[in-house]
Image (cartoon, rainbow, N blue to C red; front, top):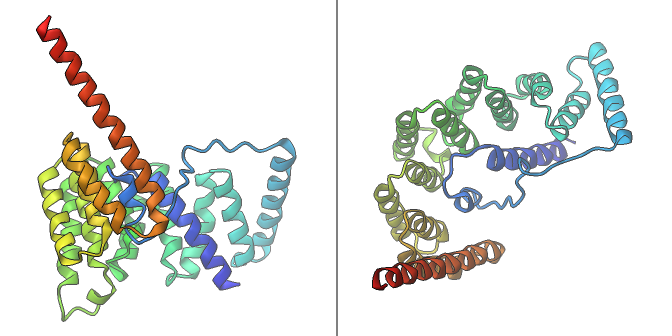
Length: 286
C-alpha cells in the first residue's frame, strides 16, 4: 500500500512541478533534469466534470471528511481527500491533508514539497518557503524542492538569492567531509542553475556552464540540448542547429521525439528568418 501511494504521489509531484513551476526558459531541459519525461501540462488542460462526476467526487470527499472526524490520522482518507482536491485543482482544499500527511511522514519529502507548491500557488509565499526549506535542510539536493524554491524566489524578484542557493548546493556537493554531499546530484543542480541563468538572459554564463558539463560527461545529452536551446533563445539559430542535431543523436530513444519536434521548429524558424532577411534586402534595393 505504501509503495503504491508513493508511486502515485511522485507522479502527481512530477506533473505539478513541471507544469506549475515556470523557472525554466528551457522547458524541454527542465523535464529531463532527473532523466524523467513529463509531456503533459496539466495547467493548460481544461478538465471538465459532468454533474454526475461532480456529485460522486463530492460524496467521496464528504465520506473521507467523516472518517477524519473520527480518525484524524487515517491515511486512506487523507490521501483520498488529497487526490480529489488535486483532480479538481482545488489547491486550498489540498493543503490540510497535505500538511497532515507531511507531519505523519516527514521522511517522505514529496508530501512537504507538494505542500510548498500548493501554498506557493495560493500566494502564501512565507509558508511555501518554510516548507521548501524544511525539505532542503535535511535533503539539500532535492531537485523538486530546489526547483520550487528557485521559482518562488523568481516570483518575488529575488534571482540572486536563487543563484546563491544553487551555487551553495553545488559547493556542498564538493565537500568530501559532508555527510549530505553524497545525496546531491551535482549535475542536476548545475543544469537547474544553467536554466536560471538563461531565464535571466545571462546566456554566456549558461553556455559556459553547459560546456563544462558536456566536457565532464560527453555521453550526457542534457547539457548539449540545453546549450542548443540557449543559443536559439538568444537568436543564434544557425549555431543552435548543429548542436541540437548532436543532442538528438546522443539522447535516449524516449527523448528523441521531443527533440525531433524542437529540430523541426528550429528549421522553420531559420527559414522564416531567411525569408524576412530577403524581404528586407528587396525593400532596400527598391
